[in-house]
Length: 196
Image (cartoon, rainbow, N blue to C red; front, side, top):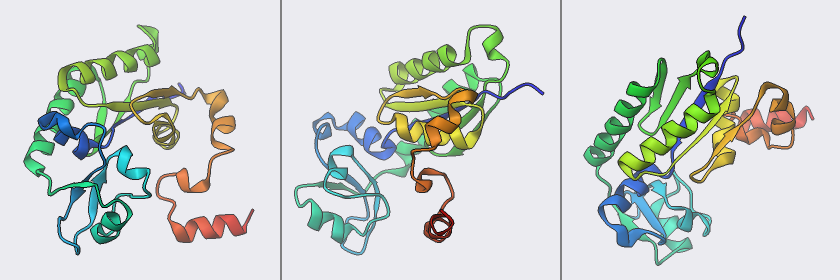
């Protein structure tokens, strides 16, 4: 059986990036998208806001305490959906087989494309097309499975790419925290840590 070539694509800080396309003065500033009241939660935050310890799903009140100068935006789901649809159309035009796993994430099965032009080169060209046509930052990783590709994208961010060949998967994954593996929550993490 032929080894798979899986590309995981993630639009970096997607809601923030969409807002910055509309309002460039937000570039380089700590920005939060989410519920604007103290009872709201952070749906997305810029990398500048993350330096203050802010993360998605954090209560907005706590985020504002950590970074009082953060710019808080309610967000606009129709704009995010429109941008996501544009990216989806580009991927659909370029990719033989893909899965849209969320508004800002995609998996592409690029198996066999290496016979024509190399999967990594092709994925970089796709990334460049998305950036050029939308202005949105995008990261991706190429590996032999969805899990390793997704972890690789997380390590490639922000706005970068990574290739993890089959023989490099174990050396790549070994030093990383178990928490980097998708779907590993706190309970599973504690259990696995207790097992060594």
